[in-house]
Amino acid sequence: MHARNLLVLSALLVGACASGGTRTPAPEPARPPQAEVPPPETPEKPSEAVGERPPANWQLLDASTDRYRGISLERTYRELLAGKQPKREVVVAVIDGGVDTAHADLRPNLWHNPKETPGNGRDDDGNGLIDDVYGWNYIGGADGRNVHHDTFEVTRLFAQCQKGGQAAAALPCDSIQAEYQQRKSQAEATLGQIRMIEPALNRAVTVLRTALNGDSVTPERVRALRPANADVQQAKSIYEQLAENGITPDVLKEAKEAYENQIEYNFDPEYDPRGIVGDNYRDTSERHYGNRDVTGPDASHGTHVAGIIGAVRGNNSGVEGIASSVKLMALRAVPDGDERDKDIANAIRYAADNGANIINMSFGKSWSPQKPAVDEAVKYAASRGVLMIHAAGNDAEDLDTSNNYPTPVLMDRSRVEPWIQVGASSWKGGDTIAASFSNYGKEEVDVFAPGEDILSTWPGGGVRRSSGTSMAAPVVSGLAALIMSYYPDLSAVEVKRIILETATKLGDQTTLLPGGERSDKVEFGDLSATGGIVNAYEAMKRAEQVAASKR
Image 1 (tube, rainbow, N blue to C red):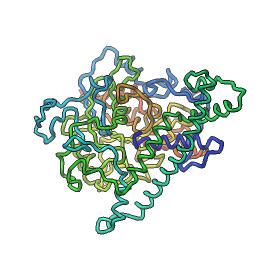
Image 2: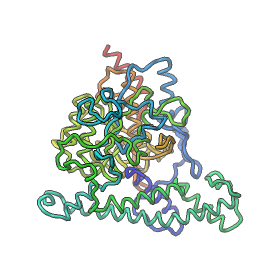
Image 3: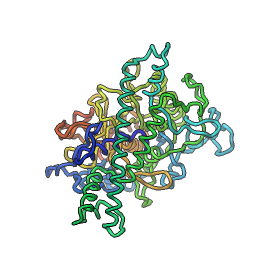
């Protein structure tokens, strides 16, 4: 499980623990209960049944016709784009943990470096990188090895503080040590919950499978059971409590491995895999390191993100990408742990130098010790007309008062314009329109987009649901690519303005505050600058108007 989604899982576990029984208190805020039935004027469909999930591609649906507040993309294709052809292919750089370049739903839409001959072992385009056909891997070594796990940035800073000396003297070590200890303790507590819940759920599934005469155990079949046996009744209760929060044996197994990795690698101040890369890590001006393996050891997160943007449309695979005329550039710079500033800066520069129109950044962290290097890369990309789209983060925090790097605000407090910060909305409607895990901020988050239970591509040729602002950001990247493909004369700043101005405004709709208690309700308009959710239909109409005015 990618580190960016662990808080989402933690919220699920806490929701289960808060639902009753003998479970221990949770270290994180409880996940809100299911949505209430909305009033007649609110068309979204609320969650109505244990374990219910929305339809595939709900993020593409329309609130007025489909009862799910997606981005009205399918309506856009039907009503606005029928009979029209895109005018260009748009290149979207996916800076992430890797992309499965063999996935049938992605392969036709992968970017290929036109100046590089695949597999000849030469640097054909003279950029200092050999065989960068699909992009580049900044967390790999020249010998073909790859960084898989890495520490969190706060762990790296904690290690510096522990060593002391001149470097430590320049750091706010008290704050760093407090955050490190708090986060590590939370991870240990969550792992303890998982280890407690897992055997109980597995036993319940075994009992239920017997009660179902060997049939597979699903929420629908469990709901239909009317057991007289006390053991089956208890198993049904346990299963339904956990299923209500999206917790299955597979989810727990994956979460257990992820949190064990956190303790073993991410929070270990002695762990340092950077030797694999072989660069001079302190030299942020260094550009030529890494390898061509853009898939890496775990491409789940990046593959999911890429599919949201540009999975092949209309092939009945179950997943529909947002942009039909897109090329996906794969840049591997995010390990299982926190990305390093130097790698992010170089990935942004690579994207800008190689024709990316959009950069999707579904990652973030609370510390950025080499921020000046990232700032320079961000300014460079902006100067080349690149639109940068960044996930707001999954900490259920107010970004007006907390940090999630990288940011469009530079060290000198100036702000880079072609940048969109994206929070995550939910499919459930009612007072859960804001995803319970999403960061927010009236000043620092621009807009929200669907980010919960999103079905997309998965390594090995499959599909899978995942949740996070990591999923919301590529929804916006896909929309931006769609606009640019039909209206190539619009600038990155104009596309940003169109997306934000046409977002469906839900300013006065009440929603639960992400991370808060059930009684903590706010107006949705207080969670972002626009108070809205992106709307492809209205964005494309506005794009036509703006483009026409320039002719």
